[in-house]
Amino acid sequence: MSSFTEASGATGAAGPGGTTACYVYGIVPEDVEISEDAVGVGEPPGRIKLVRHGEIAALISDVDVDRPLGRAQDLVAHEQLLDAAAAEVPVLPLRFGAVVTTADAVVEELLAPHHDQFAAALKEIEGRTQYVLKARYLERPVLMEVLSENPEAGHLRDRIRDLPEDATRNERIRLGEIITYAISAKREADSQDVVDRFASCTAAAVVREPTHERDAAHVAFLVEDERQADFDRCVEDLRRDWADRAEIRLLGPMAPYDFVVTQR
Image 1 (cartoon, rainbow, N blue to C red):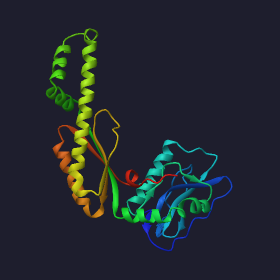
Image 2: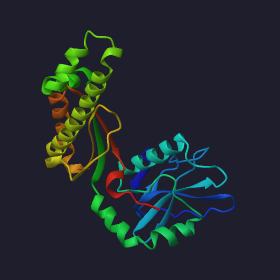
Image 3: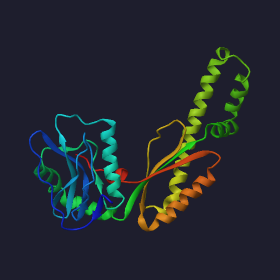
Image 4: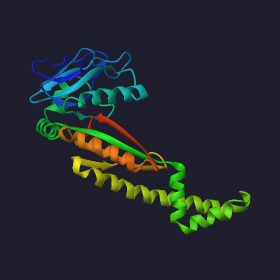
């Protein structure tokens, strides 16, 4: 059963009390309805509820204030909840760890002061979903590219090939510097190539910082539902074109973290 659907008539969440507070995941339209099996952070996982105000609502769950947040499973639960929501309805994700004292405080401190801003942002991302494309160079092919394109690198490789490591320490350091710089330059060019390739089938793109020394591209895309098929074709074209030089991974659909992250 789907955890998130657009429907009307759902009731708001009651304010927690005692040793609990409200953990806030994100902002959604007020006409969202949640199934009983939707859960979030905590141990056991907290049941997801809604706090409504005007045209918007906050996804919340109760958390024990004596239990510190920040464990890996909490971050996973936070992302899974938001990604599940984003697959079906517009959602403005809050950063991991957003906690408010009570449900009333969620309205007073978050929803009411920013109502118009949040409502406009939800309309802007309606029908759009985020995907993240990660490309990583294959080790041997990218090294061969560098050695063939850079005469100094090729010369150093030939020089140290049959000599002891201790006798060629400076040359090895220099070769490592050349390779690192060359891969960084390739990454910049290939990231721009990816953005350009997908420009016709995406609404926006954000180039993320690399997470590995052999990253070829790490790009977040905002994709409109009506252009999903075109986007998928672009991914397959890239996989085909880069088959001999990089591995391609596509993550998503997910909440639009790179485009509309809401801070507390």
